[in-house]
Image (cartoon, rainbow, N blue to C red; front, top):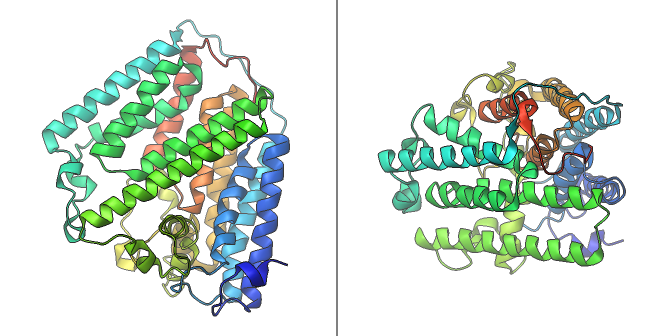
Amino acid sequence: MLYPIIVFDSINKYNPVNFLLYWVSFLFFLYSVYSIKEKNINSYNIFLFGIFIALFLNTLNVSIKQFEKDLYDLYVFLVGPILVFIVLYVFEKINIKRISFKTYLKINSNTFYLFIIILYISIKLYTGLTMGFRVFEYGDITQIQSGEKFKISGLSGLAAVLQWMLLIFAPYVKRKYIFIGILSIVVFSGFFDVKRGDLVRVFIFFGIYWYFFNFKMNKIKIKSILLIFFMLMSFIYLFSLYGEYRLLERGGYEGIIKEYLGSRVDSILFSWIYSYLALNFDVLKLYFDFVPQYEITHFLNFFMHDIERTAIGMDTSISGFNAATFIIPYYLDLGNFYWLEMLLVFLIFGFLMIIVKKMNFIGLYLFLLMLLFLMLFGDYFVNRTMFVTIILSILIFPFLKFEKNKDILL
């Protein structure tokens, strides 16, 4: 048994709850890896892979700032994710009769994609030249400028929708257009808007994209897996370097992330990984003392801007890390009954998957898988911009003529 070897000495090492979470998360993680290997990436295995690798890492107790685990953690950490897994599994197993679209107007997918790129770049340039670029006012940690200051109502929302459509329609266009699309997101969102999260989403989407299509074409080899692993580690390394640079620019010193985390491992890279993946469940525990609203506030974010929650502690963090997994908004709404609102949302997610699979809309399916993987950080599905992007993409899809990947089935 590796448990006593790899779990650090702490208040949780001999805690039976931590021990149980360790094995439950490890087994679910193994199942997800096996499922991905045998059946290709799908909704339930990518969700399990993300949420349970994070929970497994959490049980190692690398940070001295982690809290003691109790029986209530078993309820909150496991009931919701297992319920979501069951819902996704059921919807994935439903036999789908695909539909074909016969429309009088058909636009070449490459032409449409190029139009999106041009419109996206134009809006980003106009917004930046009008409101300023956030990167040029990104100084001391006590004076970080909110991204809202650099937005134009309406136009910035449209740019966000176009940005995610560049991912959704990528499987149907030439590689040179995909490259331009990715580069435009990296430059305008990643650099000028200083949004590392958007870069992570792009990387995850194309990682899922690569594996999905290579599995379909029987091209998954040990060599290719090693290549994607090397690319993943390179991305994580660059991500941590960027984080270190930001902290240094704000007056920190090299390796300060280890102090922020209270890391028991003398590694800057591992400290960054652990901070963003494993600490999320301890941040979630900070909210257990808050009185729930008993309103489905989070669900309403489908139809309106994200509702401000600062009054009930949404800014709570551990050394600045405030991601609390996708569970947190549901818990703040309904407390112990958080899984009821979660069930409602993921039933909607499941029905959307049915529509996407009936259309054989691979690009949007992969986008939904990306959102499921990101559940280890937060719920990015229940977001007006994301929801508008999904619905708009569904409406546009029948009017496009594809030259690439049109014969590959979900």
